[in-house]
Amino acid sequence: MRVPFIDLERAHRPIKQELLAAFERTIDHGGYCLGPDVTAFEENFAREQGVSRCVGLGSGTEALHLIACAMGIGPGDEVIVPSFTFIASAWFAQYVGARIVFADIDPVSYTLDPNGIESLITEKTKAIVVTHLFGQSADMDPIVELARSRGIKVVEDAAQSHLALYNGRLVGEIGDAGAFSFYPTKNLGGLGEGGCATSRDGALLDKIEILRAHGSKERYLNHFVGYNNRMEGLQAAALNVKLPSLREKTERRQKIARRYTAGIQHSDIVLPSRVDWGDSVYHMFTIQHPERDRLRAYMAENEIGSDVVYPYPLHLQPCFTDLGYKEGDFPVAEKLASNCVSLPIIPELTDEEVDYVIKTLNAFS
Ligand SMILES: Cc1ncc(COP(=O)(O)O)c(C=O)c1O
Image (cartoon, rainbow, N blue to C red; front, side):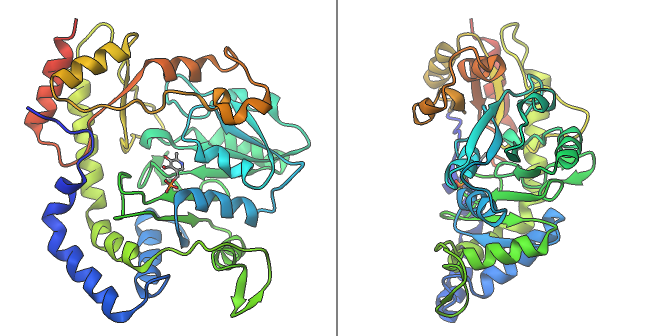
């Protein structure tokens, strides 16, 4: 049995006609860069994600970048970033010339460890980027409390965490701003690039709206140095078709995760732990095994897809050599990077496929 790690064709096959009809409407009305589909999506997503407002952008990376610009973060400032996340969390600081200060993750949630942050704060610290990694919300309360007491902004990188909860609250505006990605493989993905910024702070989002369109509010009058970062109409059209099933798809991911958790019984496999502040939305189901490459080869022999997300902690990335970090600086991040393997968890998997993965993993020796 072949079990794919990602299968976008399988995801889109049942809604292909709906997508084509939506694209046809967009082609006909001509709103290709922003436009009525984007406006509708911004409203729809804000409602579904439980945030005050959302600004549609070209990608999640650009959402992080424009949030940093709109917050006025720049050279001379420092930003605390978890060492185990996708590189774009660090681009938040790098793109605006601020200094990245890496921090370790918590071994249970794999998200920024609130205990390690205080000692990293200096008078230059302007923001903390918190990634809700693999669909698991980070432990926000202690981080937000500490940040507020020091006048530091908290930015939620929620690229992998649509509909994730933290103590009953949806992520995205628990901190000062949130960045979501709609890259095709995300829990809510378009048919190309897309992202958005969220916040309770209307003035911050007003600024991001100006920054996404060349720093211009009035045509050809440029208030700030801006960017070309508008969400495209065709992407918004696709996302409007897919958004109504996001909740159901999320529940399916959670059901698959429960099936894996109940079924995988292997003394060398560490399963993801549950935390008491909120169930993951399982963008990834990431296990650990001390011989992960051998395990992946065995899975591949048995036609089961897998991925290593992520093989390198950010403090050891060649692009950050100048920051002077070394092996051993963040042991939790380093261990996870060397042991982690993500299993297939797309909502379109059948129970038979999930059981086949379980049976195969349990027979690994
Ligand atoms: C944690 C995280 N942050 C940021 C991004 C960037 O999003 P995008 O690919 O839409 O630029 C991604 C996705 O790739 C991500 O997983």
